[in-house]
Image (cartoon, rainbow, N blue to C red; front, side, top):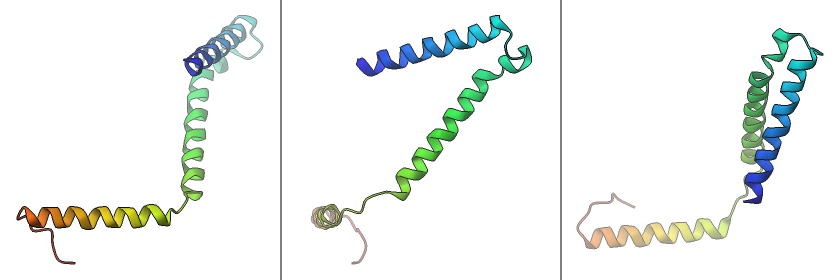
Length: 89
């Protein structure tokens, strides 16, 4: 619940800033109307960057790989017992 409140407060602050910029005419009106679009595009770029960084730092887990191979072998044995052709090893 705290995370939701943080997001809502952040949106309120950003909206207040945007409305303030619209009212104060510090930035030309044509640019101020595009600020939400710039914000969304920037947020998307940030998200893509974080996904890329996460993929570059993706940890290898040899123990988990062994457990996964064991689970696959068990599943193949189970399916063979049920008469399902799972291919050759």
